Image (cartoon, rainbow, N blue to C red; front, side, top):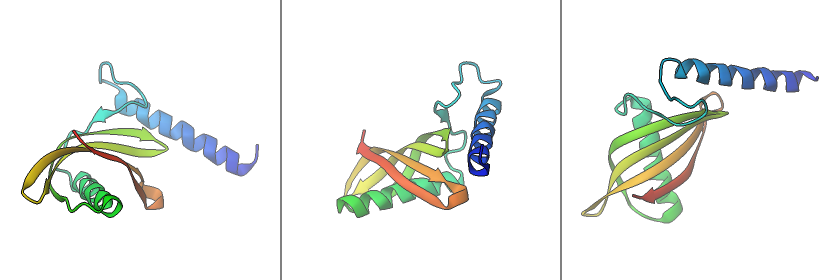
Length: 118
């Protein structure tokens, strides 16, 4: 096995072990599944939510303004998926939206996967 494949394999095992350890003590927690975010007011979660609205506006031409995050879940994959319910204003109208953002912190990579009204 070449060194790159070995590093990839070891990284995958580390992610699985971390996800399994995070799920210990949570009855019914599914490894690889979404788990509730305990503190949706965390600065990083807020940054992800604001990013989602900003990226949606860039792609759609909308002019939504972020108001707050109502709830959120995260999923550890080869990075982290954040599924957030966000309240945003469109002019005077206020709406609820679900955004999914994929992030690899160690690569400074972030991508809006989906964004839609709920």
